[in-house]
Image 1 (cartoon, one colour):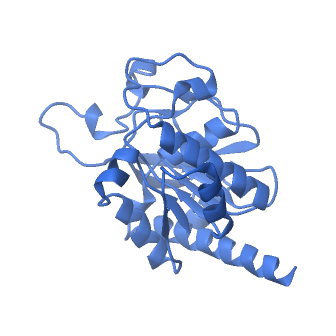
Image 2 (cartoon, rainbow, N blue to C red; image 1 turned 180 degrees about the vertical axis):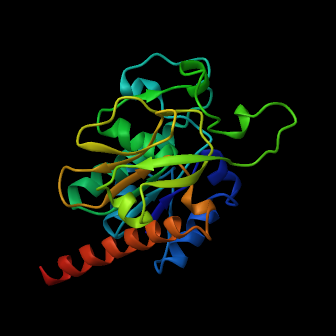
Image 3 (cartoon, rainbow, N blue to C red; image 1 turned 90 degrees about the horizontal axis):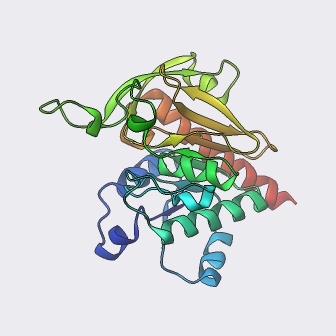
Length: 246
């Protein structure tokens, strides 16, 4: 399983405390994670991607460059990471071409949407002042820090509803941006009570591609989070078996 570094800065500093949450979740689901460098040539990146079976696109403190979806940069869109944007887009191009599963989380969900010609809300609190707290920065001064938590409602016939065994769940939340206009052939399959999109699923073919706005890697004891990673790994194994038979 290929997992790109969250940011160029973290890669250069070897800072992997948050990256390791993804590695632990993938290992717990029975697969072996490998870092994808954000600072390799397109040729080297392409060679590495060919050898990988599936991809987790992790969260990031950076935001997707709004020029990628034809928008002017909002004042709250503060940190960009061109290396991360370019690496994720290369991964997505390869994954869709080769029918390799993708689990896109938080920033990963957002760039999946942008890759498929969707757009983003650049700051939830500015665009929708009535919205729930979707990150600890939305809490009043002195409030407990850590991931915010809120309800999510799943589309009844979605993968996520099936994995959850119900159409409602509580999820963690740590983001200030979100999907605005969904990308091509992405179905919205989860929303917060305030209408913010919390998950999308690819409908263009049978390839397993799911984007979630929350952080299942930081919910190791949560049954839905466990099943999500397990199904992702199972989809990669199934694809690998088909490829070997062919």
